[in-house]
Amino acid sequence: MSYSITEPGKGIKWVAGILVVCYALITIAPLLWIIATGFKSGPDSIAYPPKVVFEPTLEGYVNLFTDRTRATSDMLEAAGPPETWYEQIARDQGTVITGASRYGERFLNSIIIGFGSTALCMILGTAAAYAFSRFRVPLKDDLLFFILSTRMMPPIAVAIPIFLMFRNLGLNDTHLGMILLYTAVNLSLSVWLLKGFIDEIPVEYEEAALIDGYTRFQAFYKVVLPQAATGIASTAIFCLIFAWNEYAFAVLLTSGTAQTAPPFIPTIIGTSGKDWPAVAAGATIFLVPVMIFTILLRKHLLRGITFGAVRK
Amino acid sequence: MTDTSIDKLARATPKTVARRIKGLSDRGIAWLFVAPTIFLLLAVNIFPLIWTIRLSFTDFRVNRPNRDVEWVGLRNYERILTDPDIWATMQATAHFLFWTIVFQVLIGFFLAFLINKKFKGNDLWTTIIVFPMMLSPAVVGNFWTFLYQPQIGLFNYVVAFFTGVDPASFSMIGSVNLAPWAIVIADTWMWSPFVMLICLAGLRSIPDSIYEAAECDRASKWRQFWTITVPMVLPFLMLAVLFRGIENFKMFDLVVQLTGGGPGNTTTLTSIDLKREAFERWRTGYSSAYAVILFVTVFGLASIYVKALNKVKER
Image (tube, rainbow over all chains, first blue to last red):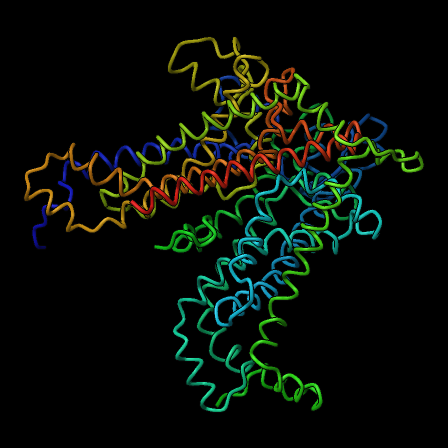
């Protein structure tokens, strides 16, 4: 290795490394705590001092997916011996399962609305980004700025008229309404990011394709789309994460059929007070996919969070 | 040439339609591609905005649709701007904005500076540090209330461990003095990585040759830091502050789950206050005026800031 005067010394590297690792451990501690709490029993989760070593149990997960009621001796007799492992876990807590909880539905809603809005957003966003990147669109800069500025409004401020509008159109608390809304929210991100990605594809490829007799459309989907695949994929993951995490619109505009998981998780309660292991279990199932996506995205993270303003 | 499904789809297109598409000029295609996006944004953003502005001059209430709606002119605006409670929420928002930005800039820049020393495994640790900012603020905020529990909460336990204070003696979200800091801490935990990532890009954009030249001129490391590193990273840092400023001005989900605006009104940020007016007290006209004021504020501040940012960039 050649010597460079700008390369930091070994000692400095060690100190920097140790400090960063310390910060990383502190910052990830609350997340590990969520995951750990999901596997604790009720009493373990609120023990003092907080328990780092504990006997793992699936109580939290069983409580998350079921509705239960405190069991009286009559009920236990009527119900007979537990037939499944999860009934056993519920019995051990002195409760009987009365049915499935709504967490499954809420999670499914998150998936439907998240993927639906992402798909729509990518179709509209790719087309618009391509046009902005390749054609002379009148008022291009103004339109692009307008698209970005829609992101500046506080969601609550927009929610008032949207609430009225959706009510008139019968879109309140429907999947379609939420998909359209999240698509509109994410369009600014997808157009700006994708325009950056498409700008980077040399225009000569398309010109060559056009000379070979491709139409504009063929050039678009046979030359540009494959070239932009990575960019499109990472933009899609960003849109998915934003739709997945969104809370303000979800809590104001949905209550029953189309409610997503973020407004639901905080409302989880047990048969006696707040059931923290169940909340933690719900949060774990909800957050871990995003962490995995973050790892996949790590090369494009910076670009995504700054709407393409900063590129590495 | 491989036969893709898109080809099949193209062949399945009726001849007349295909001819019409083929015949489109570039200009036609540009409009065809841009129009749906613009239309959706007009419908979901601009139309509601105009509606909000219209409502802001009335005394309309959503929960009483049959009542006659009266035009009240600027009365809603007048009442909001002279309401001491709203100035209190503005102050709470300013406190939150100021301190989150200060802490996030300090921590974010310092972390980026350390990571830029390129120690082994810095990529892995960077990814781990970034996790919090990608997660759902509402779900995370809800869990932070658990960490902040007196006695049983992890946060209180750790503070007690290092300072010797009784962990049951203070409640981060129950105390008037501590709650504003509880939300600052949670937000800083969540968003410092954001500033870090942007600063890191700034640091990496500085060419080695500048440092080499400074080294030849015998400039001290300290001097290099202040005359090369800081000015070169400043535009990036200002961009990070812009993003955080806008986001935290809109802040709703994390704080509403963490403290719900309490105790009292100590952590009632403007978005939370607006939500109460609009969706709990159902004063639609009044809250529309409130929304317009917020939007004008954030837009105005952001425009001034962007001008300053461009000046720094030009230097």
